[in-house]
Amino acid sequence: MNNKNIIQEDIESILLQNCDFSILKNKTILLTGATGLIGSVITDMLCFLNVKYNLNLKLLLISRHEHESKSSCTKYIVHDINIPFVSNEKIDFIIHAASNTHPVQYASEPIETITANIFGTYNLLQLAEKNKNCRFILASSVEIYGDDKECKTKGFEEKDCGYLDCNTVRAGYNESKRLCETLCQAFLAQKKVDFVSARLCRAYGPTLKKDDSKVMSQFLRNGADTKDIILKSEGLQYYSYIYSADAASAIIYLMLKGKSGEAYNIAGKDSDIHLKDLAQIIADYSGTKVIFDLPSAIEKQGFSKAQHAVLNTDKICELGWKPVYSILDGCKRTIDYFKV
Image 1 (tube, rainbow, N blue to C red):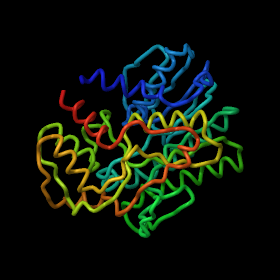
Image 2: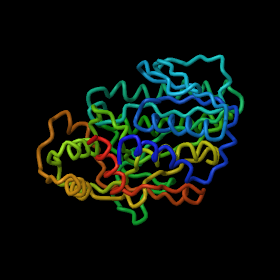
Image 3: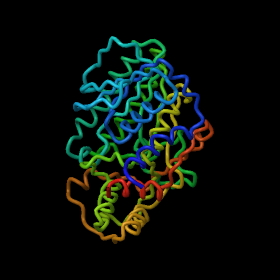
Image 4: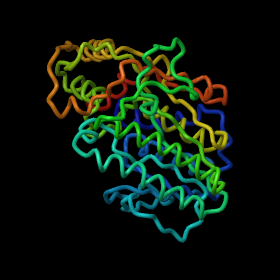
């Protein structure tokens, strides 16, 4: 399968979700992190839906760098989310998907990681308040749970909270994401801002950036380059993962059908796996092998302390959403895309 087919199939997977997309007719959507791993797929899916259903959508896409518009319905805007965003447009939905999202940034830019999460969310919630009946969707994270030291059989449910040592540099990401969700609750209670929180597990896919330092990203890049898979631990960490197209479809689904004030866990199909097993399936598909190496000091600072962080997705699945891609399917698609 070539690159074009992989991306087109990813985009069209939104149609597998049972949604009334006509709700988006003549709507304006503001998306932050529009050129990121998940934001770029959300953009492509919305552009696809716009054409397929003649929705007359308007997409205001915020990113840190200039970007060429993909269609007549998109407008890219270079903006720092630490600064309040001013718009004369009537905005109907805000999807906040901008954040530092990989370990090297957590360790080398801990202040920027925290402030971008908190100030960015605060500024955008204020914007949502100014736009009557605007729905705010926060891209939150499995990281807010911390470590599941009890190793719950069914994984973290939305009401759960695991162990998190706040007295570390790495905790800046987790704690600021927690505060973002609390800010949303505060704006709902005090300002009546309608919001939904999408708690994503560890995401991956063809839209991974070259500088992404997450372990999964390094595994996939090495696999595509037919290099050995470097494991910088014993690989006993047990996590949930999600393919980028599934993550994007879940966020769009929650934008349309999520209950106000609620958080929803999002994870892939058959995608709970130990890190060592993940490394092995990528090595097997790539024809390489897994080797062990010691991390650098800055890499180690950025590593998650959680050893067990699996998400229970019953809540969003009961709402009607379902993931399409398994961990094996997602890894194969990503490696095939990178190889071309």
